[in-house]
Image (cartoon, rainbow, N blue to C red; front, side, top):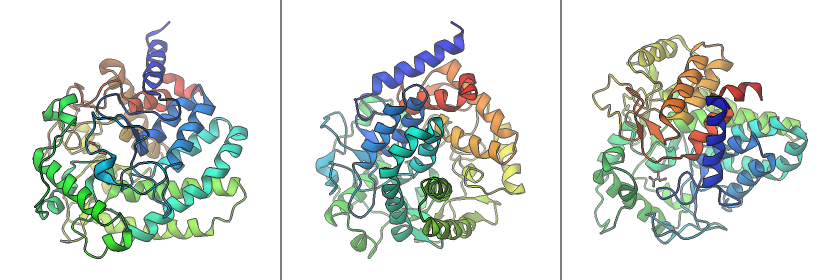
Length: 417
Ligand code: DGY
């Protein structure tokens, strides 16, 4: 067996170890439940060798959808005392105990990749999920738009928990009454690699507030304490709508509503353009200020189908300053911290999304990124994220989405499939 075959086998072992039968945990200990976008990547990994299991993953995710269309960011299929905040704190109101916020909608896009692996099976399995996906995207369009860009109401909703994009909004929250609580994440992972106590107080305060309001969006929007227009959300939803439209056409559905959303989001994405810094950026809706943050989410523009010369230039500069790209924050930024979660580390799954978009739009950096991700994983393993300067693994180990990114994109065998 060559080294690369061995890595394919190791990646499958990671998926098998994290497989709970009908859903996959991101990694044991740190994240013991089903996470929304992790799960969509897991499906892509499974699709490489078990198409049925790939669809089961997506079906389990959408089984947790709420009446209003929201698909939660965590589904608590079974209690686990090793995680905080659990179902008792969140008080979700869906068919499966859950959190009360969503996560970047990559599922339709990644379901399309699963579909393409076997269109006959795909047609049958996608059909019941399709309406659920439309309802979820409609929820974002109904409740999360500002000037056509998609906003988050909690940093966890973006998936980029402690990115500098939220600093301004988090700073205006006074987490009064948050009470005593015990973090569990830092019992699994070194605290240097995780959000700070300051961040956590505000995360929990926002959860407590949402739970008090029964996660009713009509109540939540009356007096919003935190709202940021987010490149992750905007670009992933724009892209997901393009894929959902294509899937809808294959199923013979009326896709005119989705076509309308694409127009709104294409225009809305431009409201994330920071004119001083000449790149896509987070925009704090309540204060109107820019994050001034050139992040890996900024570089999802091509994934969303949006090309521009200033972004190409920014990409070249950012990649030139690290060994392994794309860092979650430009390494020249004074806020850069190479090990702390979304303030510097490189993430394989963000590389995959960004790299796919670049390759589709003819940028050579897409292939550069694929090779750099393959090197990173083959030298440093299936970690949650990595230091972009030397590739040192960080966060959780034996991570589902890193294994899935290997199997579905970075591995040389992925090209052949
Ligand atoms: C966590 O617990 O750190 C998660 O990112 C929340 O989704």
